[in-house]
Length: 268
Image 1 (tube, helix red, strand yellow):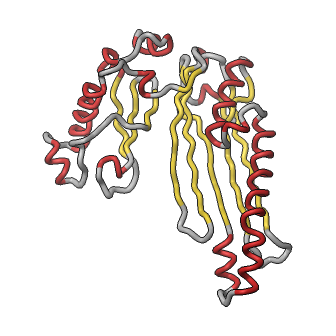
Image 2 (image 1 turned 60 degrees about the vertical axis):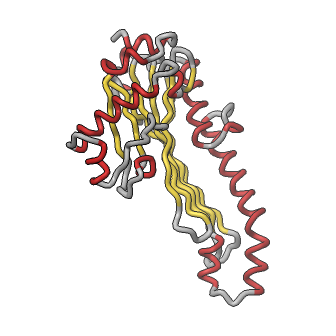
Image 3 (image 1 turned 90 degrees about the horizontal axis):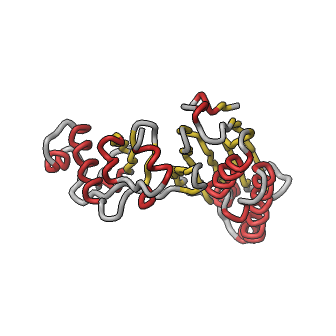
């Protein structure tokens, strides 16, 4: 069980939510034979198990929509996962079973290679990152290995405004027309991070920030906003994301205080 006050600010956080983490592992084989393509799913979700009912339902609905899809959003967490797994298994069988059996009969490809070609694996999880005042942030991470491929990995960060029951976007947080000012603050922090004085020097280190924009991925944290850049956004071949945190004291003049939750942050 994950208790919210192990993250931050539980006593002051809207809804006083308690969180649990549960894992589902689902394997399905096309036939009873040990030599058969398999569909594997590994799901690990952190979700609100107690607290203010309205806040809890909002948070869990958004977690389910992010991880499983909007069609499952009105179900409980366990119902949503069970239906999702049933739907995905049925889709896998519909797409693969007939084609696999026909391929097995007509091809000279070794069975082990056919099994690999028609097997599918998906693994994803949600993790609570921050819960303070009227803000809750979670990360969704997924790994998809389809039909013998090397697999794809990705992540998404979701910032929830528990005061207005809203998923916050960049344009909810910042005033219109302030992108260039926010970008400049990020660039200055990047220069400091790399220990250089110019954008040209960053190029020498294998990254390019001349066309930098505010990151699509960001996390609202108690002391500032963490912007997360993937290597391709910096024209870099580095492994791993670059995290740059700008304090609210530097950002507050550009933030949208028409939003009550943002106004509460700026007023701190």
